[in-house]
Length: 206
Image (tube, rainbow, N blue to C red; front, side, top):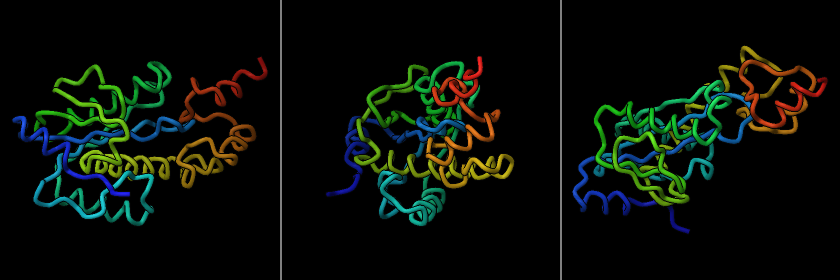
């Protein structure tokens, strides 16, 4: 099984793009915390070794790659809040985070390579959606790593203020221990009220 490569980027560059950004998000599935997106423009001459879908890497490897990407590439990380997730829905909120990440890049890219099968409607640059892009394009892999490390850090920080939910290890995903803590400790301001397990606890007595 081969990992991601630079072929999608090369194709875009050959079609006249000067700057190609990879974009990915993390945190659609959790019951708590923001959804986080990253946009990364790699330097073709300094692509870190071992880039891959962040889910296929150990935390130690992700951290090492995070540092390597930060030292060699242009990147931007952005979030959509729990309030925005509940107001808009998780898909639209994740697209909003992607739009913000692209807008936050130091230079405006010519094209964005987006992980998934949909292009965020608020993007102001051309874009291409690539299904399983984080396993195919090194730029999207890099974005998946940056987003994952950043969101895990946010959840570890929130865990300090709201102990007992296990966010430092489950990152807000609906693990057994997290769901039990929801039942026993209740809903925090950082829980997504539009998500069924949280909604059910809020309204079970009504």
